Amino acid sequence: EIVLTQSPDFQSVTPKERVTITCRASQSIGGGLHWYQQKPDQSPKLLIKFASQSFSGVPSRFSGSGSGTDFTLTINGLETEDAATYYCHQSSGLPYTFGQGTKLEIK
Amino acid sequence: EVQLVESGGGLVEPGRSLRLSCAASKFSFSNYFMNWVRQAPGKGLEWVSSISSSSTYIYYADSVRGRFTISRDNAKNSLYLQMNSLRAEDTAVYYCARGGTATTAPDYWGQGTLVTVSS
Image 1: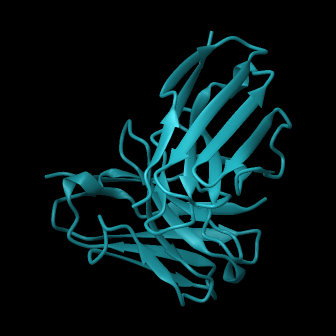
Image 2: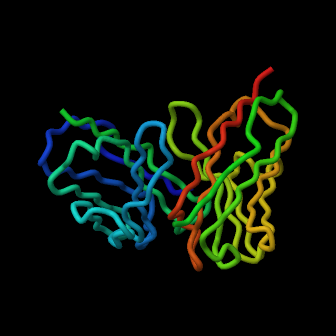
Image 3: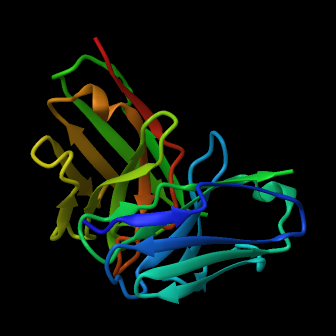
C-alpha cells in the first residue's frame, strides 16, 4: 500500500500569508496525486489534479507541484474562506489512498 | 453542474446488510469511472471502491473486499454499493464521487449518506 504522509497536521495562519502543505508518498507515484479541500460539514472539493493541474473554477491562489514522491500544495494570499482540512490522494497504485489531512486555521 | 445524490444510509445492526444508491445527473454518466469514498466520524477520507464506465474494471479496498459490491446501471444513471456483513468500523459518511473518463481520481462529490452500524 502506498502511504501518503502530509505535513503539517495543523497550521494556524493569518490572512494574506503564503501557505505550503506537503504530501510525501512511500513510493514513486509519478504525477498521480490530487488535492482536495473539505470544509466542516461539507463534502470534499477537488482543487488540483495530477499534481499541478488546476481544477475548473478553483481560485488561482491555489497551485500544486511535484512528482515522484514529493508534492506540494501552495496557497498564495490566504483568505479567511480557506479555513478547511486539505487532503492529498493518489490514484497511481491500488489500493488508492489519502493522506491523513492538514487542518488550516485562520487566525 | 454535475449532480450526485446519495441515498440508502441509516442505522443497521452488525452483521446486517444495506444498499447505497447514487443518482447522477448533468453529465454523461456512462462515460465515467465512479467511486465510493467514506469518512468515519471525525476522521479522514478512505477510498472504498471504484468501477469503470462499463463495469469492466472493479476495485476494492482490502477492508471491504468480499463484503461490499459496487455496481452501476448506466441506463438509470445510478451507482450502487451493496454492503453485507456490516461491522461497527464501517460506520461512516459514504460519498459517491465521479472519476474521469480514463482515471478513477474523483472530481465531483455528492453530499454523502451516513451509515451507522450499531446494536
